[in-house]
Image (cartoon, rainbow, N blue to C red; front, top):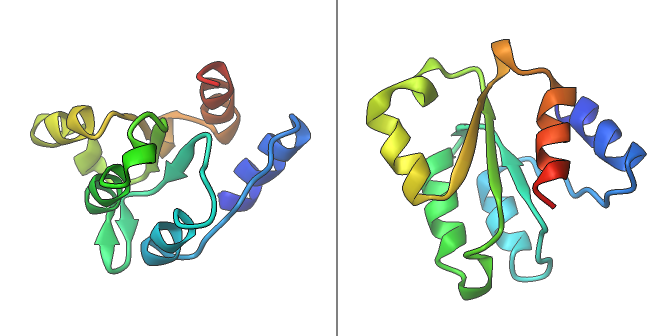
Length: 110
């Protein structure tokens, strides 16, 4: 999925960095200020909520849009919706959102 999204974004002139874990993503924040972040909720040592809250702890990351793209049905649960709102994240459920639809949404937010 990451490869498909990467290709779609690069075809539209975007620079893309792909990391293999939440920790690597958090480490990159010290060197690279993203225009947007796309992530899954299941990230190994961190879940998506933890990643986003830790990302938001960086002063210059508060306004960076975050797009959650996951097959985890829990992201649709009302209990989690408040967490995503606090994290200022848009949530997309993979079975009902294609990579192209996600990319078009991300590009509209730029």
